[in-house]
Image 1 (cartoon, helix red, strand yellow):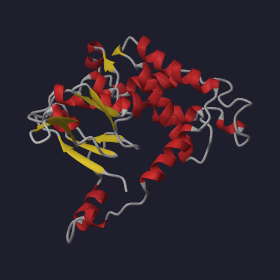
Image 2 (image 1 turned 45 degrees about the vertical axis):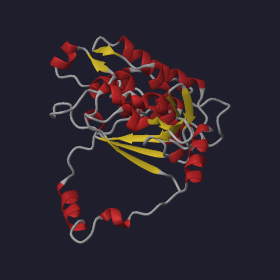
Image 3 (image 1 turned 180 degrees about the vertical axis):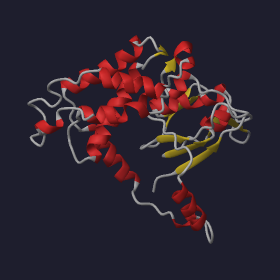
Length: 271
């Protein structure tokens, strides 16, 4: 029962198309708010970097505060609320770079690349008769998603893991290879992603492995390389990987207040 909205981002898309607009009703002589495409549980932004920075900025408030403000009035969005977007490579014609503030609001970025040979053959086979999308059916309700989010929020994080997470962020800011390091918001998202990883692993506590496992996906799109580092062949992923390989893990990532299911074998990061 989750509502889904899709936005095709184009150069002529307006911010009001995303958030909504107030329209004057001549019969009532009042302005009435007409909700935009973000008023849904799941918003899919297709080719988000084909729209101008002004239109992209329409998502800033709703992604951070789960509300939109139009003509001085604020409107709450339905919960749960999430934005999933696709973007084209920046070297493609007709694309705009996402502003830093916009990138910082996306928890993670995943680059899929091209499928392997077997996957492409399977793709051709599944599209012969009908579209696979015709067979897609809901598997969870909005209440189920809200319950999952609540479960992740209850996952325990020790002081040592918090310190390790902050150390990763501070190391990006101090790296000579980077012009812009990880923001405080990115560390919040890094820890949330680590908690979700722990929950998926049927644990109610976070290990350093959870932080390491999601660090590149959560941080790589937020940091900006120094020009010399980029010219030398460095990438955001390689810089983060280097930081993680050099940064020591705390001695007690699961302290005495954690759940009894913690085991000494999980206290060290695997290489």
